[in-house]
Image (tube, rainbow, N blue to C red):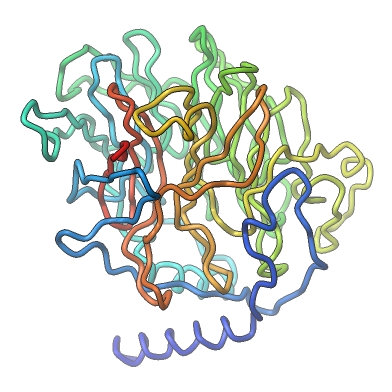
Amino acid sequence: MNKTLFRGALALLVTVLAGCAGKATLDPAQQSGDNPPLPAARDFLMPPMQVPIGVGWKPGQSPKVAAGLKIEKIAGGLMHPRQLLTLPNGDVLVVESNGPGEEPVTTPKQMIANKVKNRSGKGGKGGNRITLLRAKPEGGEWEKHVFIERLHSPFGVQLIGDTLYVANTGAILKFPYHAGETQITAPAVEFTDLPSTVNHHWTKALLASPDGSKLYVGSGSNSNITENGLEIEYRRAAVLEVDVATGGSRIYASGLRNPTGLQWEPQSGKLWAIVNERDEIGADLVPDYMTSVQQGGFYGWPYSYFGQHVDSRVMPQRPDLVAKALVPDYALGSHVAALGLLFSTDNALPAAYHGGAFVSEHGSWDRSPLSGYAVVFVAFQQGKPVGLPQTLVSGFYSDDESQLYGAPVGLAQDQQGALLIADDVGDTVWRVTAQ
């Protein structure tokens, strides 16, 4: 089959699958908070899909921002910018990455799903590098310097003292860091291993403890609901705790299908995560969420979701574990694909956006209408989320949902308090401040 016929057949398949899915009956905002409505699960021969075609941003085009905000492009021409880290001297590191690409395909469903999702531009080749951005005194786009090269699907990055830790998909590496340098040429030293990618969830979020003695790693599952077997899920669907002195690790919390962002909540001092939940049981199931992460806590995957809601597809059942499953603190809506989390007590945005969490939503691939594709703010009081998410940045896709311009991932705050957003479909870093 030639490429034109294949693209036509693929587009027809997407249309058929989206039509088979039925529309979502709940708005993502209705499924936000500590007690979201959860309709009955559905079963599908093929997962329903609706994916806009990735086209990128036209010159002069940018996302939409809420009233009182302004947005500017500070870097473009990147290769799938995923994560951001502001260094003490004000430089910003941009991790450019995507999945390893050599993952085996184990089912026809997975093959079709991968091809459909890749239409969005989310599946393009990543840079496997870290770029350093430095603001120019005269303003405008920031300087770009290739900081570290030849990485293997990196995602998380953290600085402890003068050591930079980078989470590749299968190991944490460490590099010597010297403030002001625009390139690290020293070879990487492998610090500790991580569960390597097989064919699911390659990202490894990374967060240092406040005292620098520990590193916390988000390790996603290797499946939707253990269809590749339980053995391969060892140290997956979990937050790992790594001792910085020895490199030894342990499972800190489990049952978290894909914890893609980790942060310390400033008022309580607790560890929080954003988690992508399971697919293929309906447009309104299951809400992705953010939650405080308890040491030794179990959050349900794969046997149940949002507490004790049993997933009947998983065999054998484990009612003993379901009984222990913790209810997440705050739902974000089904299939929004939250990837970035940032707590901020003070920033360069209006006061309404102080004292809460910014969350980037990479966007759905199996929901109609689309959900996510936005950066939202959730207010916190006394260490707990309150109210509904407020949309800060949107406009990442066309009004008819057919074209995708960008998709937000990592978040950071620069030295001036501006919100920085990594956009991996638009290959851009955006900067948001008060107007």
